[in-house]
Length: 362
Image 1 (spheres, rainbow, N blue to C red):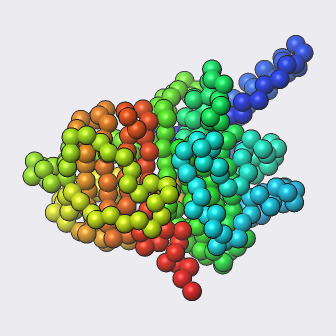
Image 2: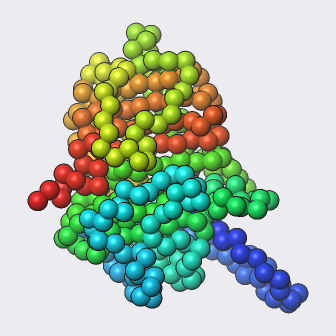
Image 3: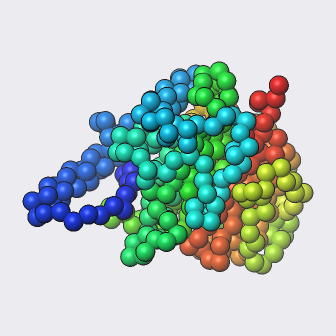
């Protein structure tokens, strides 16, 4: 995924006098300049593109950003955003349009400019730089579905919701839930540990143009998978490729607690280059987390590669619509096209630790 200037759009339009329109046009030029400038990681506009610091500093930063956001809300807004950590509403997230599945929390479109910036600051503090960029890219892709439409389905960045479960704390568990159409991020923080699962990433369209450059929100998830499957020898491909046509997610949103048997190629027989390619592919999801948490998680998954399976449904030529699954003792990743390559859903889960269940056992 190539990095692009951050762009979170709003779709409000009102009639204005000519002078006001000129002022807005000048402001727009300035905003574009700031976006390009932010991509260089300098100045205040770049603050939300900087990866959080390591260890306890990551948690402290996330707690500070979350509390700063809460302080900007009125009592009614806080009541909509803040839930008990053990609330039964926690699993009520989805990748479907918000008109089909109501979300927890407040929508970005309901927030003032300052509140919206503070909301994005929380997300940036709890993810890596590339993870935050992926979130922005997915939202910007969803904005493409709004253009020239009546938007009865309420697509677009204004309709992404943020909720917090538990009081932000450096020691007690709490969770960020953020998402909308094609996105459901669940990051649980327990002390210095961050847990990403379960999280859904998706995109429609799979590519679009922003500031003259092509953006592919899930480019690595596609390209690295085809790289891996084509590194397999004929015997390995025979074990990995289980069908000629893609299938849908099995463990997507709403499937908490469900388990499925592993299938496909057992990765104990992979050579070193193939193992490295598999870990790189897994990293397309795991590296959504801050660097310290991601490194620890990848190391743990590397230690279990012998017990991990890789399954593939569809052609092995890049550009084809395919489903694949990576499954190990503490990992399930699924990638599933929705009728073609321009619409993709993915999920990452840890059957032993979704919502940090293992870390929060009492």
